Image 1 (cartoon, rainbow, N blue to C red):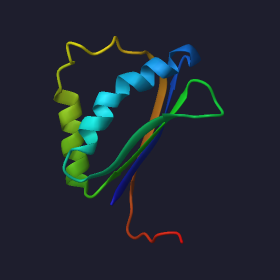
Image 2: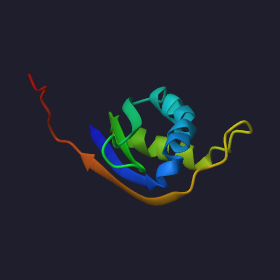
Image 3: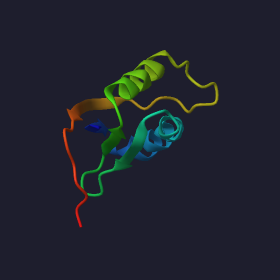
Image 4: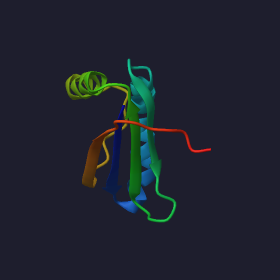
Length: 101
């Protein structure tokens, strides 16, 4: 399993528009082979900070997702993109896991 997690910063006045603009990508990603979770949400304590959380079954599934995102044409009805101030995303390969009870 792979976990992708990150922090994306935008102007605090743009965070709602940024998250709204990410909804189609979240919906599409969740339908992709191997996607177990794909969420982007606002940090409730730090304005302008969005948290990305993804889980993928395999590296091949994640690589196919990244390739699809890179080659996808912009949707004609998509809102204008929101400028990111910074983006810090990490991939973790998990050897084992257990459910917390």
